[in-house]
Length: 239
Image (cartoon, rainbow, N blue to C red; front, side):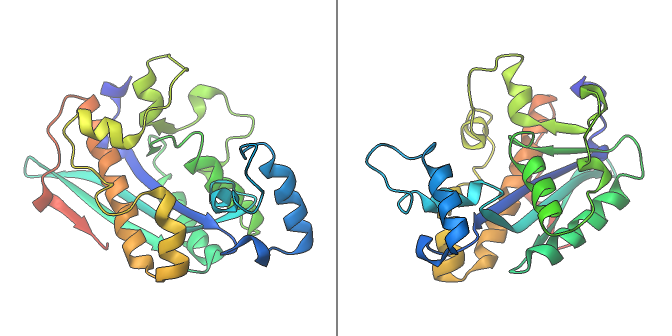
């Protein structure tokens, strides 16, 4: 199936998320109680709910999106190019509104797909949930309720790598290594995003990291299809 998909019809994406509050003690009483309940399922025996609050960003009910980076492939004079754009900032509702308007425009061609690494388990549902929480309307490509599996236009590079094997999680970092793709984890990793945002107040650093992940996902799809990687000179960011 993958070989039948046109690269130009894929919108690659990645998101960066953080806990809604910098520290546990800043939670309002109701949210704190609910987090305490949630944390029982993720904390080790010796850990308190406060100690595991740094992981709150991976849960859409307790986290928020600060960056969505997207990219697409196009060909010109026989060469492959990749354009990247990021939606980011402190105002989650604004960045989601802008992102959702963009993918509604992108989706007007019925052959279009979204692609992310572990996107079906994380990126796509996270964006959808935070969209609803912010009082926004779901874009068509994320409104999957009642659709049959083959009607959902989502690609997932981790799922593709499983080949039907559902036992293992394979990281993007591992896959880029085995396919000799430049690592997107050469500066920070996902566990450091909240610290960079809240303590360093350096969202531009986070955006660069997110954009590297998007490029890595695109390079991975090219590797799966047995095609040459995108050359650095053909990567255009800030569109």
